[in-house]
Image (cartoon, rainbow over all chains, first blue to last red):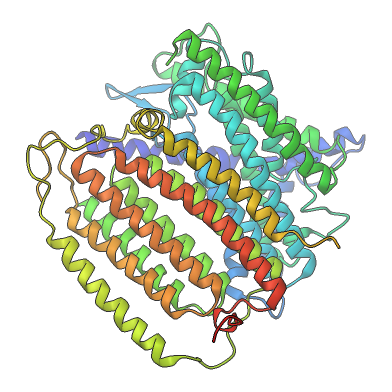
Length: 343
Length: 172
Length: 110
């Protein structure tokens, strides 16, 4: 088999694996996890009728989304109204293309690296996708021809572009210490040295808080504000488009957890363990997804524990607290790397 | 056609088609969205020109920040109405179109006929190692172009302050 | 257009990139001349600037010169600053004259 076809087949196999894990295994079960987790924290059962332990609740929800009538308000821009959920969903799913979900597996004598696309600007690519995802929110709010949706959409996009800054600057501190923009290089550095959450605690905390704001999760979910703005930017959406909004929120959550694990918690690596051969590669995949799952549970846990921020508190936090902290973190890291003569 | 030619044809075609769409659209919101797609096409062309970093910067800054700012202004001030009146200066606009097309032909002729850089003379800057230009750009920014870098930093600060002052409502 | 020695030749002929950049520039120019809405004019100007970025990158790739990337970087930064100030001016203009069409902003005309 020529190298070109081998690479093509390997890429297709990797895409299939990542889609199978995220779309088929994680996304539907996230709905179940969220609602059972909510029940657990709020001392009530949660969904437990559909299937054993309520595990088929997600299936029931998906069926409901498909079968409901799609109501579109009257004077909307039809094209924008239809396209907005798609613009929100596609960047969330495409983020997985650059995240390394395992070390490497030897197949037919060649090492197949467990990243779908090992581009040399991987981390920048993720930020570019976040910037594009803003359009979905703004258009959803605008195209609904509804004051409250517009307010929700504008609030949400202002929140996202504000927190993007602190997220970016904390990530730059990680990139300075790793010396490269490639996610696999960042993970390799962490595997060789120490997980980034230890020397860069401040940056890690800033990044995690900013990730909560980026995915519109409580305590930053004022744009969806269930009690205030009806449902914010997705008020006027029903049936499948509404389902797409929720899918994209969960996909964003998975992508944010994966980024946190890759940048700060060692990716697929464990301290003092080297992964070799086929079983090593598969084990590294399990480690990565276990860590990602842990952070998803943290997302769900925080959602049902904390109250929601008011909008001005939210903007204050983003600009006056997180941004200076992340810049300070970057300065300290850059100074250490420069004086040590690092990469 | 090789894969590269196909990719070029697709992204250049996408960019040009949506640029035309942007010029033709009546409402500003749709123009902005057409321009976003154009910028995406141009980012793909930048990757083909061994500049993936610049491609990411185009998407993050141009498509992701500047055009979002445009959308904010349009939505908050409700500037989305189409122009209702008749064209006030049709002759001037027709002449402008003719002049722009003539200039376009002239520019195409000049750029496509320009002679190749003479073989053997080295250019001013360092060679770009393909797909690894980030350290090279970093070094250039902080050595040869340091003054411009600092000047742009001050310019961005001045722009932020200026925008704030210009758009503040009078508090009297 | 043969490349300089020591630089990998481009798989797509550079003339194609130059033509694409020039066509995008002319489309932006047409938009800037024909539109009446000030925001549309501004959008066309942004398109012109990005088309020039594309041309710079093509010439940089032809000569293997990284300084074109630095120039493009600065052009993008300046475009961002210009967009911020320009939009602030439009906001102030809209508040004063309740219109954003350039044909109506004619108080200083003779």
